[in-house]
Length: 123
View 1: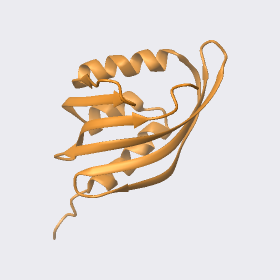
View 2 (view 1 turned 45 degrees about the horizontal axis):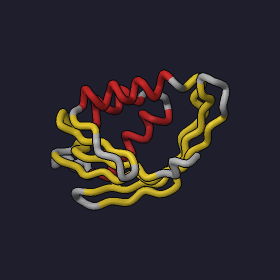
View 3 (view 1 turned 120 degrees about the vertical axis):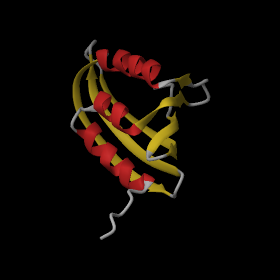
View 4 (view 1 turned 60 degrees about the vertical axis):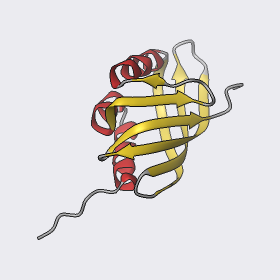
């Protein structure tokens, strides 16, 4: 009996379930390499899982209430995945935020080694 090896797209879909249920930091431990580089738009990336977890904690501290996360499209091959999503939350200051973004991931050994988010930073 052979066990099917999860593709990057399979793993990405598993990660979405973590995000939908607010388990974002758990997802980082499960789906990202120790040497991951994460970047937003054309900005330089943040290197290392620990540094990115701290960055994510700072973002989560700005969220008062998580409303939702919806994936509109996702695709991938053996090394790269892409997805388009919206996320919605109430910020600590009371602002209602609904943000659309596209994310691109490069995978190594079943985990994300590089990820870049593209979104309208003027919003």
